[in-house]
Each structure stands twice: as C-alpha cells, then as structure tokens.
Length: 151
Image (cartoon, rainbow, N blue to C red):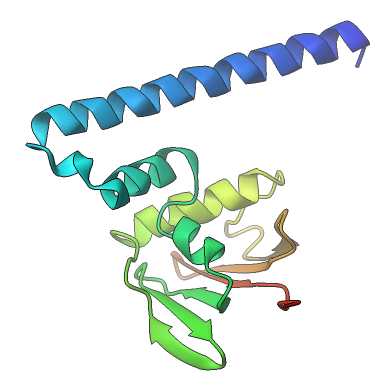
C-alpha cells in the first residue's frame, strides 16, 4: 500500500473513531435525559461506554489485576478465578447472543471467525491474555487467561 493510501486509511479510521465517540456521548446524554438523573451514576455511564466502545462486562474484569481467568458459559454467565478460587462475576452478559457479539468483537480484531467451520480458536489479546473460544451445538463458550502478575 502506498504512503498516500496509508495516510488516507488512517485518516478515515480516525474520523470513524471520532464519530463513534460522539455517537456514544449522544447516547449517554439521551439516556441521562430520559433516566431521571440515573446517568449521574458513573458506573452506569461507564457500563454504557464499555458496551459501545469496549468489551461490555469484560472491561471491568480485564482491568482487575486480581483476576487470573475469566470463564464465559454458553448462557452468558461469567465466572472469574481469583487466587485459585472461582466465583460468579457481579456483572454478566444479558444473554448468550450478547456474549457472542463480544467474543466476535475480540476475534474480529485479529481477523478470526468462530463458526462451524472453525469451531475452536486459541489466540492472544494485545495485553498478553490468552483467549480460547469454542462453538458447538449452536452455543459459544470462551475463556480468557491473564498473563501471570509480576508484582
């Protein structure tokens, strides 16, 4: 790709990010206007922005350095492993389709597609976390294993 085409592609991607950011803020503002002040709650605003720009309920879990593993069941429920103990996460996916959209987002960032033709995928996220996703009988499960802490 020529230098000019690279610049044009980068410019288009930047404009798209700005547009998405503005749309996200419009959604938050609209929610604030109709929710009777509920969006003054920073956790709610963060959850909306995580859903639009990030990985939904996984965002907070990926920021928590105490979590070593994230397990997502076919129904969208999330369990986490902290210091060898497994517990249900406070926030989960709304349903299996919500979970599937998020894992598809993770995999699409690496040009990977989970389907009947490729029912198992193992890959690494940008932060070094290992992702294992499986598709069987029309259901998706996945697991994220964080790199060991170095503190």
